[in-house]
Length: 473
Image: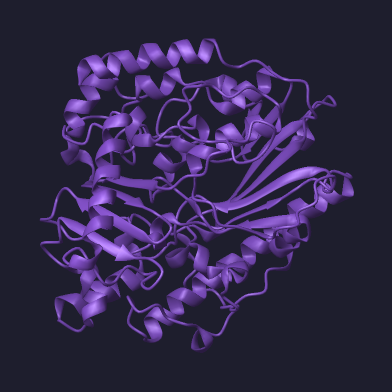
């Protein structure tokens, strides 16, 4: 394992040096509008008619809804590391949530049992952020304002990264790439905004089968929908500024979420509710979008090569993602898509999963803890308290209890067409044996190809990923 990781560092360095040349094409402006902690199925353009979102929906006038976009990890910092590097987090040492923590210098009380401080992966640090490559090729880049990438990002990644960062702060006429994050939909807002006036009627909401259909669930869902409405309003302000400056029509605008929803069995869950995210892309006016829906299997690791492609910049060969737009668009389509889980703050639960468009296979490496990990941060939510109480008193239905089941199955297999919420584990159904074996093999091959350190502890991994263990600056 040590030799493999050292070789990976050398290989990454070689590819970065030799693969970032620019082609002469139109360099469009690109804006990312990123909400936090939201699953696909909360939005009208994915079939939920609960809300009208006029500002986000106008992106569809010359845009496409992507049905198959997925986060490689169902939690923020690892997902963000994939976005900025074009790499699977478990291949570059960024899969453990709160490995490197930009916001804190020492572990909180819940995390201190981990017995190692924050660390930054040397492999991840060797990969030049795609935003830095944009800057080297004439772009102005701004980030407003998430900075938690689970490893130490170079200062060259952004022209500006702050709460005030915007394309509006650039002084020249260069093209720009600007990111805006909207924290109002974050998990924490489910309890922080719990007492505010609701903007939707809880009685009108459709409760998914893995939650009890009661007033506490409905209220929590109503808070989330209300938060999405507020995010739509904030996004409208950015869109209006673009229009006033005659930038809207000829820019790419990406709207997406960093992973699945803010609720239990969403964020931190290997299921589709945790990994499958909304994505709309509005195209420049010169590009006519005839097809309004795209069903390709896509992953956040595809964002970095895609942005470089539409900017006409050569894509580093080390990238594991595939460009799905632009002159360097990858012509091959994925047959399989992979997701993973490792540590969530103080709790480790290694899981790997692979899916095709129809089926999904999950492998749980620690069956002795439930999918409902005892995460202290999430425990602040009324819905989580409610579910725990109902589980402790045997008041959940069979479907609702699955998330709490201990031991959990070593393997899970689902028919996503018939069972989109993954409630009917078909791993022992003989009629699926060929597809189960195929997905098992696909997962094994992927683990081997990306040098996934699945069989070593994080404490051992830290020694391989760092020159020495020190607290972050």
